[in-house]
Length: 169
Picture (cartoon, rainbow, N blue to C red):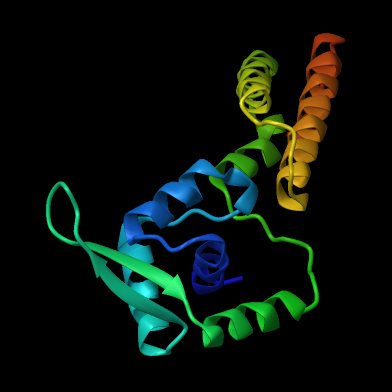
């Protein structure tokens, strides 16, 4: 997946400024994509040069004119072609997942504390994740619920005194 396609998808919902697009990405973790404004603006410029988006300057009651991007017919075609590509299993790239993969390297007490903290984070995130109206949002909620069940099972195993042999550490 590319940031450009995610931006086209968001612009397919409604025209937006680069700032608005950044806010939408941050506000909807179900999209499965994060990007800084320093990444969004160059991607928008490439889309603009390619004819996939159009730019319109609008007056703003505060500050300089607002740059609003909208998807073009070519952008809609490109987005549909991208959507038609076969789905694949997502490949995570997150430091937190790597740390979870090496929990057994920590002392039992530190492992349990980390798992309990992770469980709290999952629970809070699930509380703030409403039932989905889209497949992506339903997927996000189900992943959080599954991850919470995993954390509970790991905490239970840790509390039951399950220990690893030195070779497994």
